[in-house]
Image 1: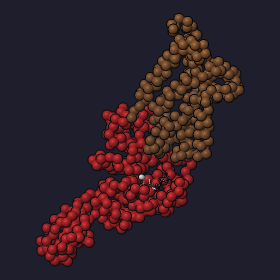
Image 2: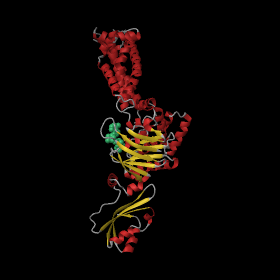
Image 3: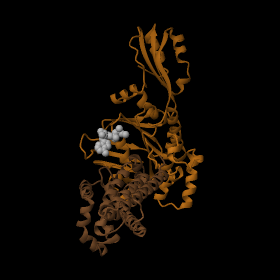
Image 4: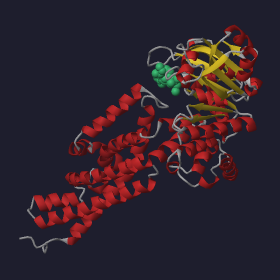
Length: 220
Length: 322
Ligand SMILES: Nc1ncnc2c1ncn2[C@@H]1O[C@H](COP(=O)(O)OP(=O)(O)O)[C@@H](O)[C@H]1O
Ligand SMILES: [Mg+2]
């Protein structure tokens, strides 16, 4: 019998805040690192201004390596680095570095893909105007790829929500952690249902906000 | 204004050279056409002018600047004086028409108020005054190319490069765009290099034309010479393919005469006079009257019955006979 009476709502409130803190902190850093990385990946690809086979291959390899390591492994392997970076490997703060290391390469790839959709003629036209590479990136590539980049941020945010669930392993808290500890390990099905519903609402809100932004920036 | 000195270009990805020992000179304020079949090297040639490609050997000199040897800052300065338009327009779909036109000014560091004034001029100049706030996705192909042209000349360009600029447009829009380009040449003294695989584009607007075949320059000259007195086999092939030149009528039982006439002769009653004076009968087997940028011309294929020699002699007083 599930009656929802035994739920400690303040636990759930705290867990929701922890999830939001992990998500927003790691998403901001992921975009801050992944966007430039994606731009460099694109510029180094064949036929582009910094076309460089070795650099492109090397970067791709690192990105793919980080993308292929399961998050739970990354979380544990990174503990010493996390401590060095933020002073602790525990809690919300301790979860953010591994979240960023997992998500930034993934997001960079999405940025590279979005930039590849920008027309060859458009890039040449802007280059032929006498644009510096900086002008090309800031005034043409990123504005043109904005819908794709925003869609990439949305996909990355949703992926981060599911990563945060695993961050409970390092005692980061959050909704996913609550679901595992109460719902799974103590058979408190009611807690599990509530946390899953809250996660679903979060993902749904992220997706809706993302879709809206993409539509706003689409001019094709 | 633009000199190619023994220019060759081989792409590092291998294959045959895209250009072979090309030497040519384009004068200031002329409209220079480059024609050739697909893959002949036309785009490569025009891209050498603004440094989108660098020559493998030889020199390209534009407005006194050796393009192949230009350092990055000099290259950017040169590119600001050389506008370019493209087959697919190359506009920013995320920016309005006005912002597209303002982009080269922004890049050149022109202050906002000067930019605004210049964009208003440009919108007027290309007939888009009512469309400044629209996005390229809301425009027709011809309107998009007008934006492309305005953007290319925004920073006071002295040279305009057109790479298949009308190839994506219907014939009527093509004519509008060509007349806009001719106006810019006349009003601003712009030097224009026009790449195309369409013969009639060259015929309508160019002063001189170069014919490229497999990376080699096979013929260069005034448009009338290339159209009416082609020397190279490739030129004849391009003309025949475009339906230009004389019709072929081997099945006429009498003598077939090809008459080419230019200038004043166009307005003369050639056929009736020749028939009256020599007593021959003339049959029109094919022909057309066309227009170059400078003057008109006609090409007639005639069947002659009667004293063919007398007819040929009489026709020859009006134009070239073969
Ligand atoms: N970036 C490039 N890399 C390798 N080969 C190229 C490149 N650009 C053009 N080519 C080759 O050079 C030749 C001439 O191409 P192009 O100048 O585009 O011809 P056109 O504009 O007359 O159709 C073609 O054989 C083409 O495949
Ligand atoms: Mg081409």
